[in-house]
Length: 506
Image (cartoon, rainbow, N blue to C red; front, side):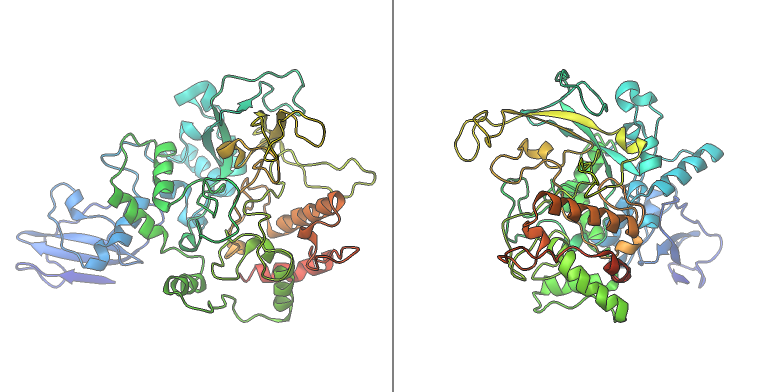
């Protein structure tokens, strides 16, 4: 579609000669229209994308004149979209990356190993730089700095580096990725931990993040939910700022309006029109909230019943804030408990191995590429547990020092809190929404499940391990107080097909 705006003596299509704005190739943008404006001896052309936003302002191209655009073309959403795709980041510095280089629109605003592999191959074949591959996300960055070129985590796992400061009571040990870490290992002088995590999608961010609902996690930051996989960031603006600093390498922070525009764009991206309707209803205070599910066939309806019993206690989708960050609900239907806001589903590496014969559970082992990300940590406990008893006392009092070996300590890196007095923060992560899950493979915070089938197989082993450790665990039953406990929450192998059918419709 072409539209023109006449100024001076131009013809209906802007006349000849024309001065066409040279538009940069921005990833993920599809031109839907061309808007021209004329003045004097020429014209400026602006290409509009599928959202009605100008891809580039003629004022940013030397030798052209500013073009007045309609308000919907220069509003916060369109400005935010342009910034999301902008590799230049003029005035901010940066390493050539745009948000869209990692949150790829072609990958549902996340990053898959397959796409990273294809992009590395294309860069090698053409010689054209791809800013996805910057030294900061190379495996050998700590040893080679700007010369680092090992992008195994990006291409094999689809993971990027997240560098987090170690809490004062947490130290890294010098055994590297050795498993088990020798008892003689010593603490290093490292002040930060490099964690490798998947790129979370920006879709549905309007209904995720802090929700203000009980129960809250016993410790901050963001006891009622947050952004990023560990819930460590409180607003979309601060999330963007953190990413710009650490992944885009900016030297100057953008103004607040810049970040607000970027948030406006992200909050308008949804996994489906149904989720957008839900977000609108939540914003309007509508009650009851609309049901997001389409018309389901018999198998899908059966799968929904399995989901509500086996998955809904963690993945929400019910109540006043049905986002993936809603707290777990256990016991009587719909009754919140203070048990879990953040959770460990044992996807970090290495995974537990059952020593019983025959084994009662058997998780899929992590790949060699995933095991390279393992480190061992030493946690010096606070000295006084919540009970007031000094650490190091008789069992069951915790020892003063705890050692763990893991590829991702989760929220432990935010709090330094082990397991004293209740659920600690070791390997605890936020709970994601499952809307659009069939289109967002791979899964988990480290991309270790390539398919929905692999994801469900992991959960089957997870429930088996819980039962082996605590047959009466509330996580296993929807009938609390029954003796002996009725284990009916985990889905069975016979139910997996129906559950898959429902998940593919979310």
